[in-house]
Image (cartoon, rainbow over all chains, first blue to last red; front, side, top):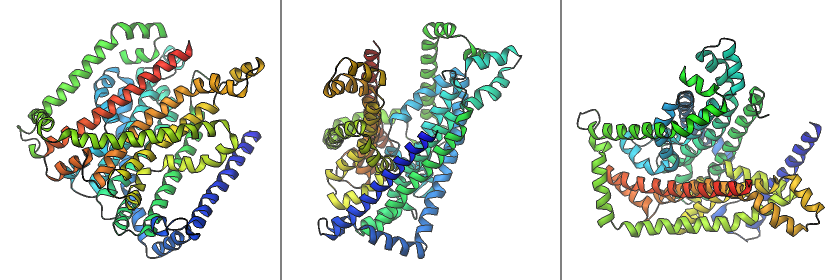
Length: 259
Length: 271
């Protein structure tokens, strides 16, 4: 336990150092004229621009717009993915019926259908939510499915010997047992939902981080663009870390017979 | 009751039902589901449930496919997209495997590079597309860059994981029999990390295909993504679906291919 803590600290210290190193290198490379600031801006300019955008409220507007779509799409994907995953995990026939569609969904780059969604739902929020929903759905569905399917057989048998009905086994054994796997699926879904929202916003939106990136990109204003790019990256890391934390919290629920 | 049985039954019974009943049954159900979907899709516009202008029909899509292959300059656009895909992907392999090996074998390098690597792996690298366009123009170069960025991180991280998770018993045994560092690397670490490397490649395929399409949809003068955008804005849903299906088939085939190699390697390793 203590050794593990130290191990983590060492990784943290070296990791922080390398992050600082990248920022310093970036600044120096531009200051010494090695790279043209037009292409990449500098950390100090980006920081100054961030403060400006923060004060005029555009950071808040864009982050709010992105998070709004993100929350809707992830919420929908979670509900639909978990319900479908539970049905497919419990009834083998449902799994067989869904499998071709899931395979198709898995291998098709969802964005290829972007123009179709624009035709159906119009530019803006509904299309963004639909694309991000499809991005996030697959891992949540697949993990719920495998969680329910891999229910600990000994536990299920023990429960049945004590007179549990199938519904009891589902609610008391299969469902709690698969929560950690579901959370892992959710963690993957978070990253994919964010990708979906931002990519869809790149193409057409009135607000949001992806919109800001395209907008300033078309004006060739690298510094302003970098602000949103950095925010997206930080957002991705923070949201995934939150889910990783939840994952370790629920890990103790895991009833894995192989351990 | 039956399904409860299924999860609770002992292993032998499960395998029995698997080898005799399940494959045919599940394949039949899958086929029926797909046919039902196609039939529903075909008749829905006629029944007035949906507007056929927005959904097209399977038969229309089929005819459009023939039309696209015959006289839509399909090979020209496909060649451009394929060039972007393979240029970016091969570049990613060339860079990421040595990097993965370095990170997998050196702890200090791993601690230093892991956090920025992880951040870029988690974050949508596609947000870098507009800046790539500023740097590299609107031709193939920014798409190749985006494909590269999408593919490089899964391969690096999986190669690294494969290298650093080599079975310590093998390492110790090789060392006690007098293996040099080079021997250990070529005989233990490389074969040991091959499955993980292939998993990385498989994940990278999906991201790379996505990169080509997003890159071309964003800004382009030719390519499959360009055609998608063209027919999307012209409301030619049938042709749009043909191109979308071609992209899906390409991604699917490549994924299945890598997965089969992956399974072969796993089998070979367990022998």
